[in-house]
Length: 151
Image 1 (cartoon, rainbow, N blue to C red):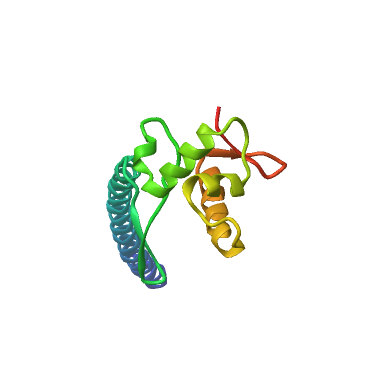
Image 2: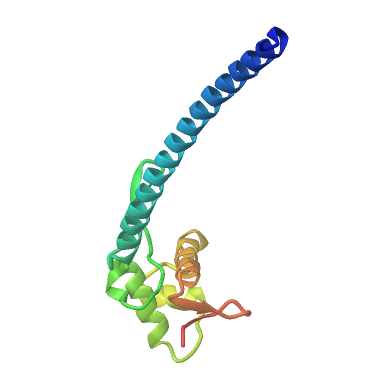
């Protein structure tokens, strides 16, 4: 005959293990659901990264918004991106720098593109465009502040 106390302990332990099994099954289901969500997120991320790469590979400048106004963003210089992808005023600036006998100051570029260089307020936007072209890899700025084309 079985000892009733021992039988009671076995039944209690079996109940604990059944409860633990339910908890583990629930946790396993949650883990599987989260793994499925992560797989979906990964596919979405890969698709978006592909779309972004295609957008960045476009040759033309991308219109943007600054202060509620449409502006043209200057693309980075890269293989396959030609100067004609720049807005016309930036193309004129690069042409002026290229046609100069050597490195030029912003004032000299302004004279060529038709900016009133006697007014500092009109020269600063041109200097800003020159620096933007330097930042995007289209021009090079020398330590003395002059601009030249990239080699």
